Length: 156
Length: 136
Image (cartoon, rainbow over all chains, first blue to last red):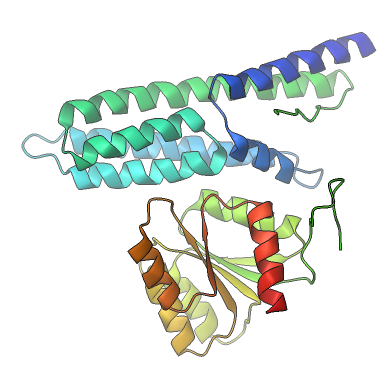
């Protein structure tokens, strides 16, 4: 059992580090993890659940705003991008935040093709992040079920 | 005063009562947790108008108000001005976005803030500020 726990813990450490190295996550995610404690063991999962709900809602808003026949209201698109940028920054979703910065520039330039491209990329990135984090949470569950503790991962 | 292994202050010097004013449920959840983690207790308001109503009803006074800038119903600038007109003496710390320019930040400060912090908030940003404001 100890060998299994050790193996899972190493897998978890390596996986978590890879998420930072590949740019999915940044220091703000580390800050969220630090806030999680025994009194609120699901804090990070709950915060991320709110974030992914935000993503679905805001991406939907952007898609509808860009789908207007006639003149697109780029300020409306930009408002949703601004909100998503804020949310992604709050949870440490680095790639999503980076895309939002580019997306906002296209909105300000009234660049329709640029906005559509960014919308597609944001959708891909948030879904990729969702999958990666689900895998990370699954590893945490396996460690706990095997009788171990989820290790703190030092990113630096 | 609780410190971590690096000697950094982890808790504020006294138990603060904090009002968190923000329309974003995600930010509310994170900021509530930060305040709890540093030893404070919090109440929330979903927009500036709610914050004004809480104070108008007269039941509550807060050591600290964390005030988001962009909110529906009544934004952070208007809310801060209104609270100061109502003679609210709480420390009010504005929470701004990095996208806000210098002029927007200045207008927010001039509404009656004690200080401004940029999102995302962390314990390390807020603890020294609260201790500094309390010492002043």
